[in-house]
Length: 246
Image (cartoon, rainbow, N blue to C red; front, side, top):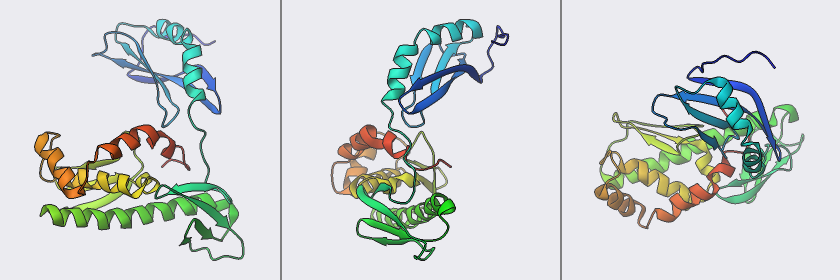
């Protein structure tokens, strides 16, 4: 083993690796001035293992402590769903409903969406990259329409709507009026996606999570959005395991 420094940079990967199920992860150590004790977290969305330590804790001590938690870490990794590729014959939950990826060299390179089926041709080696581009474009178009719909109901302006692939949030609204979503929302059921859109549009009126904000979300969504938030907490990690990130 290489020599271990007695100090820890703010964020650093280590040589300590954990294996659980189909997931392998090197330990990432994060030094924090606010941390009082060592805290370990296995992220079910990305499969990363992060140890947050107080500044006073040295690297050697941190690695030794994490190694002692191997059984718990690897059990947590084993519970993480494997990454689901976007290949011929694979099934993804578009709008929360199973859709099979139907690839054939005889089909057009242009993606065609049918009931329970995503039909596409073109080179097999570039299939996943092309499907990801299509999914992001489709998400951008759908979320744009739904955002404008709820913005009209709320009588507010939205500067622009975009999509990305963040890990920590499903949507965000800036003070400037720009709203951005995770494209993976189109993998969730329609009612979950729309509740999230109503949530972000409501931030154009209330940049907080107070009672008035929650009342406006329910008014725009025309239903209680709580089940949608619960659905994302239960199933959101699995959506992050579909296809490559980026």
